[in-house]
Length: 457
Image 1 (cartoon, one colour):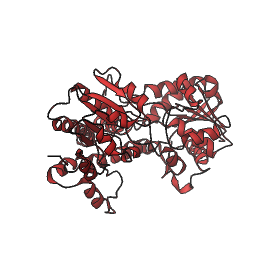
Image 2: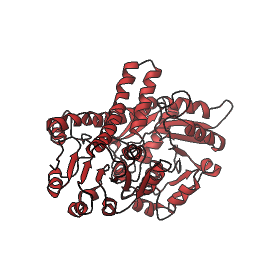
Image 3: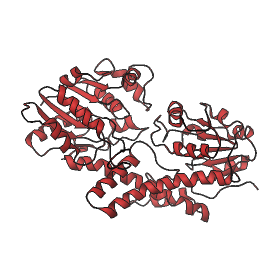
Image 4: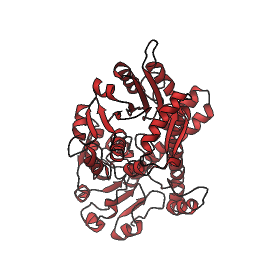
C-alpha cells in the first residue's frame, strides 16, 4: 500500500514531537496531529508549544503549515488517513479490576471506535501508546466487525524516547521497532510503515517482529532501565553510612563492559510518565498469568524508588533538628528530569507534598516547569510560592532541596546564595551533582545523596 496521509491521534509528549520529525524528514507526506483538547491544539499552533523539548520548536517551525498540521480531531481527518498513529494516554487504572497496577485503556478503546466510525477503505492503525501485550488483538476485534468490507491492519511501533533528548532520539534512533500481524496483509502494512521511517533511518535499525513481542518490548525496556536506577539508589544509604561515594562506585562498576555506565547515576528516584506505570503494568500482567514471584520482583523496583524518595525527605526533616515547620525550603527543580517541562510522576511532587505536610513553607523554582508545578501542587494544604529565579527562591531559606539536576543549578554563584539564606544553611543534593567540598567551604551543611554529609560544627 502507498502512504500519503498520516494522522496521529494524541498531541502529547510523544505524538507531537514524533509527527514533527516525520513531517520534517518526509516532506512528501501530509501529517496531521489531532487531539480532542482544543486548548492543546491552539498551543501547538502558537509560538509557545505545550511541550518543551530541545530542538522541537525549530522542527515545528520548519514544517507547520507546509506538511504538518495541528487540528481538533474530526471525522474528516480520520477518513482521509492511510495510516493512523494512536498516541493517547494509557495511565495506571485508579478504579475497578487492576486498580493501581493495570493500564487504563479507555482512551485507546474510544480511539479505536472513532476509527471504526469514520475510517474509509484500507487503513493501517499503529499502536504508538505503551500498551499491555496482546492489546492489538483487542483492537482488531473492535475494528474487524462482521459484514464490514473495510480492511484494517494493526501494527505496534512503541516509542523509546528519552525526554530532554527526544528530537535527537527520533532523528538518530537506536532502533525503530515494528510489530506486525503474521499475515501477508500484516507484512505489507509493516513494509509501508518501514518505508516511512526509511526516509532517514538506516534499514538495519528498523526491526520487524511479531506484534506481541513489540508490545512487550516497551514494557521490558522501561523495566530494565528503572531497575538499574533502583539498583544504584539501593547503594546510596550504605555509602552515606560507610564513607563510600556512590559516584565513585558507579564509575568503577560502569567501566565493566558487561555493565556499562548508563543509568547508574544515583539520585532521589526516577519519575516521568513511563517507568512506574510500565513496571506496574508488567507486574500486573505477570500476576494475571499466575507468575507471582516474577510480579513481586518487578514491583520491588517501584518499592525501592518510593523508599528512596521517603528516605530523602526524612533526611531533610531529621537534619533540620527534627522539624521544618515554619521554615522556608527552596526546591530547586520540579520537572522529573532536565530539559523537559514534564512533571508527571516527578519525585518533586512527593517531596513537596511531604514537606508541606510537615508545615514547611516552599519556594519552588524550575526553568521550564513552573506552570505544571502549580497544577501538581494545587489543592495541597500549605504555603508554596513559585519563583522562576533560583536566587530569589533561596532568599531567607533555611535549606535548599535540589531535585532536578538542571545545568543552571551547577552554574549558580553559591556564595551569593549562601549570603541570602538563614543560618545554619543546608543543601540537600538529591542528584549528587554539586561539589560538596566547595559548598562546605562556603559555609553550607551539605547532604549529597550517596556520600557522607559535610556538616559544619
